[in-house]
Image (spheres, rainbow, N blue to C red):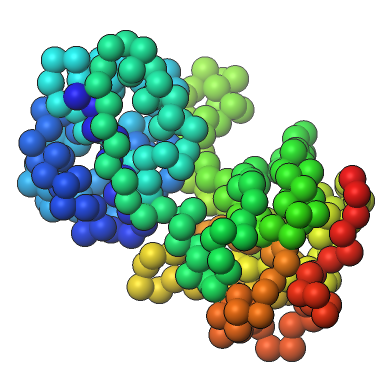
Amino acid sequence: MLFIIGLGLYDEKDVTVRGLELIKSSDRVFLEAYTSVLSIGKERLETFYGRDDIVVADRDFVECRAEEIYLPAKDGDVSFLVVGDPVCATTHSDIMIRAREAGVKVELVHNASAMGAVGSCGLQLYNFGQTVSIPYFDENWRPTSFYPKIQYNRNGGMHTLCLLDIKVKEPDFEAMKRGKIVYLPPKFMSVNESSEQLIEAEEMRGRGAYDPDRTLCVGLARLGQSDQCIIAGTLNELKQQDFGSPLHCMIICGEVHDMELEALRPYLLKDSRYEIDAEGTLFQREVP
Protein backbone atom coordinates (compact mmCIF):
# COMPACT_ATOMS: atom_id res chain seq x y z
CA MET A 1 0.00 0.00 0.00
CA LEU A 2 1.15 3.55 -0.77
CA PHE A 3 0.13 5.99 1.92
CA ILE A 4 0.30 9.65 0.89
CA ILE A 5 0.39 11.43 4.23
CA GLY A 6 -0.12 15.13 4.86
CA LEU A 7 2.20 16.61 7.50
CA GLY A 8 0.35 19.87 8.09
CA LEU A 9 1.93 23.32 8.04
CA TYR A 10 4.36 23.70 10.91
CA ASP A 11 6.55 21.06 12.55
CA GLU A 12 6.82 17.36 13.40
CA LYS A 13 3.89 17.50 15.82
CA ASP A 14 1.36 18.51 13.15
CA VAL A 15 1.08 14.97 11.79
CA THR A 16 -2.20 13.20 12.60
CA VAL A 17 -2.29 10.23 14.95
CA ARG A 18 -3.21 7.94 12.04
CA GLY A 19 -0.42 9.40 9.91
CA LEU A 20 2.12 8.84 12.69
CA GLU A 21 1.05 5.23 13.17
CA LEU A 22 1.44 4.53 9.44
CA ILE A 23 4.85 6.23 9.27
CA LYS A 24 6.11 4.16 12.18
CA SER A 25 4.90 0.88 10.65
CA SER A 26 5.83 1.50 6.99
CA ASP A 27 8.65 -0.41 5.32
CA ARG A 28 9.89 2.70 3.53
CA VAL A 29 9.32 6.43 4.05
CA PHE A 30 9.88 9.26 1.55
CA LEU A 31 9.70 12.98 2.33
CA GLU A 32 8.69 15.17 -0.61
CA ALA A 33 10.79 18.34 -0.61
CA TYR A 34 9.76 19.86 -3.95
CA THR A 35 6.34 21.52 -3.77
CA SER A 36 6.69 22.91 -0.23
CA VAL A 37 8.83 22.72 2.92
CA LEU A 38 8.33 22.52 6.67
CA SER A 39 10.02 24.87 9.13
CA ILE A 40 12.16 21.99 10.43
CA GLY A 41 14.65 19.53 8.99
CA LYS A 42 14.45 15.81 8.28
CA GLU A 43 16.38 14.97 11.45
CA ARG A 44 13.66 16.29 13.75
CA LEU A 45 11.06 14.32 11.84
CA GLU A 46 13.10 11.15 12.16
CA THR A 47 13.55 11.66 15.91
CA PHE A 48 9.82 12.17 16.40
CA TYR A 49 8.86 9.25 14.16
CA GLY A 50 11.40 6.92 15.78
CA ARG A 51 13.25 6.02 12.60
CA ASP A 52 16.43 7.09 10.81
CA ASP A 53 15.80 6.03 7.22
CA ILE A 54 13.61 8.76 5.70
CA VAL A 55 14.56 9.39 2.06
CA VAL A 56 14.26 13.01 0.87
CA ALA A 57 12.56 13.17 -2.53
CA ASP A 58 13.70 16.39 -4.18
CA ARG A 59 12.52 17.81 -7.51
CA ASP A 60 14.69 15.50 -9.61
CA PHE A 61 13.58 12.46 -7.61
CA VAL A 62 9.87 13.32 -7.84
CA GLU A 63 9.92 14.24 -11.53
CA CYS A 64 12.32 11.61 -12.87
CA ARG A 65 12.30 8.70 -10.42
CA ALA A 66 8.78 8.66 -9.02
CA GLU A 67 8.45 4.93 -9.71
CA GLU A 68 11.03 4.33 -6.96
CA ILE A 69 8.45 5.73 -4.54
CA TYR A 70 5.33 3.83 -5.55
CA LEU A 71 6.53 0.54 -7.06
CA PRO A 72 7.94 -0.78 -3.72
CA ALA A 73 4.38 -0.37 -2.38
CA LYS A 74 3.37 -3.43 -4.42
CA ASP A 75 5.16 -5.67 -1.93
CA GLY A 76 5.04 -3.61 1.25
CA ASP A 77 3.87 -0.40 2.89
CA VAL A 78 5.36 2.91 1.72
CA SER A 79 4.66 6.30 3.27
CA PHE A 80 5.07 9.34 1.03
CA LEU A 81 5.09 12.44 3.23
CA VAL A 82 3.97 15.80 1.88
CA VAL A 83 3.71 19.23 3.50
CA GLY A 84 0.10 20.33 3.96
CA ASP A 85 -2.53 18.01 2.49
CA PRO A 86 -2.00 15.25 -0.13
CA VAL A 87 -4.52 16.58 -2.65
CA CYS A 88 -3.39 20.23 -2.89
CA ALA A 89 -0.62 19.79 -5.47
CA THR A 90 -0.81 18.29 -8.96
CA THR A 91 2.53 16.57 -8.34
CA HIS A 92 0.94 14.40 -5.66
CA SER A 93 -2.11 13.67 -7.81
CA ASP A 94 0.20 12.55 -10.61
CA ILE A 95 1.99 10.08 -8.34
CA MET A 96 -1.35 8.79 -7.07
CA ILE A 97 -2.61 8.22 -10.62
CA ARG A 98 0.60 6.54 -11.77
CA ALA A 99 0.64 4.29 -8.71
CA ARG A 100 -2.93 3.13 -9.32
CA GLU A 101 -2.16 2.51 -12.99
CA ALA A 102 0.74 0.31 -11.86
CA GLY A 103 -1.63 -1.73 -9.69
CA VAL A 104 -0.61 -0.14 -6.38
CA LYS A 105 -3.26 0.52 -3.77
CA VAL A 106 -3.24 4.13 -2.54
CA GLU A 107 -4.61 5.62 0.65
CA LEU A 108 -4.62 9.34 1.54
CA VAL A 109 -4.19 10.74 5.04
CA HIS A 110 -5.37 14.34 5.09
CA ASN A 111 -4.08 17.28 7.10
CA ALA A 112 -4.21 21.07 7.30
CA SER A 113 -3.02 23.04 4.28
CA ALA A 114 -2.69 26.66 3.19
CA MET A 115 -5.84 26.18 1.11
CA GLY A 116 -7.88 26.08 4.30
CA ALA A 117 -5.63 27.99 6.71
CA VAL A 118 -6.00 31.22 4.71
CA GLY A 119 -9.45 31.46 6.29
CA SER A 120 -7.67 32.57 9.47
CA CYS A 121 -7.55 36.09 8.02
CA GLY A 122 -11.33 36.33 8.25
CA LEU A 123 -12.32 35.85 4.61
CA GLN A 124 -14.85 33.06 4.07
CA LEU A 125 -13.52 30.03 2.19
CA TYR A 126 -16.73 29.55 0.20
CA ASN A 127 -16.17 32.99 -1.34
CA PHE A 128 -12.92 31.93 -3.04
CA GLY A 129 -12.62 31.16 -6.74
CA GLN A 130 -9.76 29.54 -8.66
CA THR A 131 -6.40 29.34 -6.90
CA VAL A 132 -3.44 30.64 -8.92
CA SER A 133 0.33 30.25 -8.76
CA ILE A 134 2.62 33.26 -9.12
CA PRO A 135 5.94 32.15 -10.68
CA TYR A 136 9.17 34.11 -10.45
CA PHE A 137 9.75 36.50 -13.34
CA ASP A 138 13.18 36.61 -14.91
CA GLU A 139 14.74 38.62 -17.72
CA ASN A 140 13.59 36.15 -20.38
CA TRP A 141 10.29 34.87 -18.98
CA ARG A 142 7.51 36.98 -17.45
CA PRO A 143 4.40 34.76 -17.52
CA THR A 144 1.02 36.26 -16.62
CA SER A 145 -1.25 33.25 -17.11
CA PHE A 146 -2.60 33.89 -13.61
CA TYR A 147 -4.00 37.27 -14.65
CA PRO A 148 -7.19 36.15 -16.51
CA LYS A 149 -8.02 33.75 -13.67
CA ILE A 150 -7.84 36.60 -11.15
CA GLN A 151 -10.01 38.71 -13.45
CA TYR A 152 -12.51 35.86 -13.81
CA ASN A 153 -12.72 35.45 -10.04
CA ARG A 154 -13.18 39.14 -9.38
CA ASN A 155 -15.79 39.49 -12.12
CA GLY A 156 -17.72 36.92 -10.10
CA GLY A 157 -17.03 38.68 -6.81
CA MET A 158 -14.71 35.89 -5.63
CA HIS A 159 -11.43 36.08 -3.73
CA THR A 160 -8.24 34.67 -5.30
CA LEU A 161 -5.65 32.71 -3.32
CA CYS A 162 -2.20 33.21 -4.84
CA LEU A 163 0.36 30.52 -4.06
CA LEU A 164 3.87 31.91 -4.39
CA ASP A 165 6.78 30.28 -6.17
CA ILE A 166 9.52 28.36 -4.40
CA LYS A 167 12.81 27.27 -5.92
CA VAL A 168 14.48 24.31 -4.23
CA LYS A 169 17.49 22.54 -5.74
CA GLU A 170 17.25 24.45 -9.00
CA PRO A 171 20.15 23.71 -11.39
CA ASP A 172 22.68 26.40 -12.17
CA PHE A 173 22.62 26.34 -15.97
CA GLU A 174 25.75 28.47 -16.31
CA ALA A 175 27.69 25.91 -14.28
CA MET A 176 26.17 23.11 -16.34
CA LYS A 177 27.56 24.74 -19.48
CA ARG A 178 30.99 24.28 -17.91
CA GLY A 179 30.28 20.64 -17.21
CA LYS A 180 29.56 21.06 -13.50
CA ILE A 181 26.42 20.02 -11.64
CA VAL A 182 25.68 22.88 -9.25
CA TYR A 183 22.42 23.82 -7.57
CA LEU A 184 21.28 27.33 -6.74
CA PRO A 185 20.43 28.29 -3.14
CA PRO A 186 16.77 27.81 -2.12
CA LYS A 187 14.55 30.75 -2.97
CA PHE A 188 11.07 31.52 -1.67
CA MET A 189 8.88 34.26 -3.14
CA SER A 190 7.74 36.87 -0.66
CA VAL A 191 4.48 38.83 -0.55
CA ASN A 192 6.59 41.87 -1.45
CA GLU A 193 7.94 40.24 -4.62
CA SER A 194 4.56 38.89 -5.64
CA SER A 195 2.98 42.31 -5.12
CA GLU A 196 5.57 43.86 -7.43
CA GLN A 197 4.92 41.19 -10.08
CA LEU A 198 1.14 41.52 -9.81
CA ILE A 199 1.48 45.28 -10.31
CA GLU A 200 3.68 44.65 -13.36
CA ALA A 201 1.18 42.10 -14.71
CA GLU A 202 -1.62 44.68 -14.49
CA GLU A 203 0.58 47.18 -16.34
CA MET A 204 1.29 44.58 -19.03
CA ARG A 205 -2.30 43.33 -19.46
CA GLY A 206 -4.09 46.58 -18.64
CA ARG A 207 -7.59 45.09 -18.34
CA GLY A 208 -8.34 46.36 -14.86
CA ALA A 209 -8.45 42.97 -13.13
CA TYR A 210 -7.37 44.77 -9.96
CA ASP A 211 -6.15 48.22 -8.95
CA PRO A 212 -2.77 48.35 -7.15
CA ASP A 213 -3.91 51.47 -5.28
CA ARG A 214 -7.49 50.47 -4.42
CA THR A 215 -8.03 46.71 -4.42
CA LEU A 216 -7.89 45.13 -0.98
CA CYS A 217 -5.35 42.29 -0.71
CA VAL A 218 -4.07 40.15 2.15
CA GLY A 219 -0.50 38.98 2.66
CA LEU A 220 0.05 35.89 4.82
CA ALA A 221 3.26 34.33 6.09
CA ARG A 222 4.02 31.11 8.00
CA LEU A 223 0.39 30.01 8.25
CA GLY A 224 -0.28 27.61 11.08
CA GLN A 225 2.88 28.59 12.94
CA SER A 226 3.11 30.43 16.25
CA ASP A 227 4.52 33.53 14.55
CA GLN A 228 2.22 33.63 11.53
CA CYS A 229 1.85 37.10 10.02
CA ILE A 230 -1.23 38.54 8.32
CA ILE A 231 -1.37 42.07 6.87
CA ALA A 232 -4.14 43.54 4.69
CA GLY A 233 -3.92 46.54 2.38
CA THR A 234 -3.42 47.42 -1.27
CA LEU A 235 -0.69 45.91 -3.44
CA ASN A 236 1.31 49.12 -3.32
CA GLU A 237 1.04 49.08 0.49
CA LEU A 238 1.84 45.38 0.96
CA LYS A 239 5.00 45.55 -1.12
CA GLN A 240 6.51 47.79 1.57
CA GLN A 241 5.68 45.61 4.60
CA ASP A 242 7.94 43.19 6.48
CA PHE A 243 6.40 39.71 6.47
CA GLY A 244 9.45 37.90 7.78
CA SER A 245 10.64 34.45 6.81
CA PRO A 246 8.89 32.02 4.40
CA LEU A 247 6.52 30.55 3.38
CA HIS A 248 4.27 33.33 2.07
CA CYS A 249 1.00 33.46 0.14
CA MET A 250 -1.50 36.18 -0.63
CA ILE A 251 -5.14 36.88 -1.43
CA ILE A 252 -6.64 39.33 -3.90
CA CYS A 253 -10.09 40.11 -2.57
CA GLY A 254 -13.32 40.08 -4.54
CA GLU A 255 -16.51 41.21 -2.86
CA VAL A 256 -16.00 41.60 0.88
CA HIS A 257 -19.08 41.21 3.05
CA ASP A 258 -19.58 43.04 6.34
CA MET A 259 -18.73 40.02 8.49
CA GLU A 260 -15.58 39.33 6.47
CA LEU A 261 -14.43 42.91 6.77
CA GLU A 262 -15.04 42.92 10.50
CA ALA A 263 -13.02 39.71 10.91
CA LEU A 264 -10.26 41.11 8.67
CA ARG A 265 -10.12 44.48 10.44
CA PRO A 266 -7.39 43.56 13.01
CA TYR A 267 -5.00 42.93 10.11
CA LEU A 268 -5.73 46.09 8.10
CA LEU A 269 -2.94 48.60 7.76
CA LYS A 270 -3.67 51.87 9.49
CA ASP A 271 -4.77 54.49 6.96
CA SER A 272 -4.88 51.91 4.14
CA ARG A 273 -6.26 53.43 0.93
CA TYR A 274 -8.33 50.40 -0.15
CA GLU A 275 -11.86 51.18 -1.31
CA ILE A 276 -15.18 49.36 -0.91
CA ASP A 277 -18.40 50.72 -2.36
CA ALA A 278 -21.87 50.55 -0.86
CA GLU A 279 -22.57 47.06 -2.29
CA GLY A 280 -19.44 45.62 -0.72
CA THR A 281 -17.58 45.21 -4.01
CA LEU A 282 -14.01 46.39 -4.47
CA PHE A 283 -14.14 46.95 -8.21
CA GLN A 284 -16.27 47.95 -11.15
CA ARG A 285 -17.33 44.67 -12.70
CA GLU A 286 -16.44 44.48 -16.37
CA VAL A 287 -17.33 41.98 -19.06
CA PRO A 288 -14.06 40.47 -20.41
